[in-house]
Length: 472
Image (cartoon, rainbow, N blue to C red; front, side):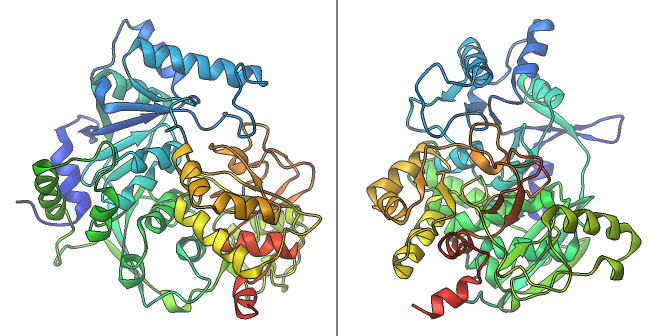
């Protein structure tokens, strides 16, 4: 039995051969595709008269362009309709399972994979989407890949990759009230920077990580790429297995027991050696928000916005650009910044526990969305949407003034009709705050946890959710 980190073990189990380039040819356990990055790859197959090597290992959904208000076909957006039709033709032609809008299982690719039980510990998982690192929450190696690599995986079920170093990120202590997984990862990226993880895969561990739900672990692994890491993962444990058991594509019966035994063996060994280790105190983390135009420009809600004049020259220009775009000044905190839009969604924070936490807070506060705020909830999948409706969460959102919509990526990146308008500022549970990310080149995005989104929605400004919790 091999020893070392989970990364070493999973990598070695999937290594086919070493390539002359110094890269490793890895077998891919699960390939996830969607409508945006797959059409060109299928076109390349047709040009070369190639087929899909293992269609049973590829699964498709539609998420980026799908409208969240009305699924009537044809879509009002001609380009979106065309992209969906192409995906429908390709999946049918190559006998690939497609979670289409009529299936009841459609949703964001990184929500659908786990909830269907497709994401399993010890796998290598790839998708033409940078946030494939999400699946590392289950003890997988999840990598975002480009279009030519999608072609390669479709044709061979293999990919060429360069092995990375492993950084252990230890989060000790317990989180305080009003502090969540989103705050942990924003703290990590804020401290280590958006390029701090280049050359690394992140292994997350420690009491604060172990105490998270699977949804919380997915939120953290999801944003590993925002810190420059190639992937991020958490060692599988009882929490992992309890989440997976009974899901449609998970092993069952005797196969389940064998699978759990195998999954336990891929955990990093107690004496595993890491290339670097960084430790955070989870009890010292407060609700986090971004103030700029990268996820690394993040700080605690009580912390002052930094002064570019006091930064290293490499960071100064970006900080000055961020302050100009966001219309902010150094020295003030983000609390009290006016909010125009509140968005609860994305592959980072649109799972059932996120919606439960947000709805619970709304009920606790007993207050509606502020009159001048446009608020929406976009569930991560049709499964999440149905569950939230069955539990009455959707009613809570609607009664408070949130627009309850269908499943999709939505305003995370604004590839459908859900977009910011002009200079609107959005309190968002998504993962990127780049200029133009939410559909308007002048729009402004402040990243935060779902609970903080709710606080901003009812107050009409960026608000420390802990203060609202103390007042109820």
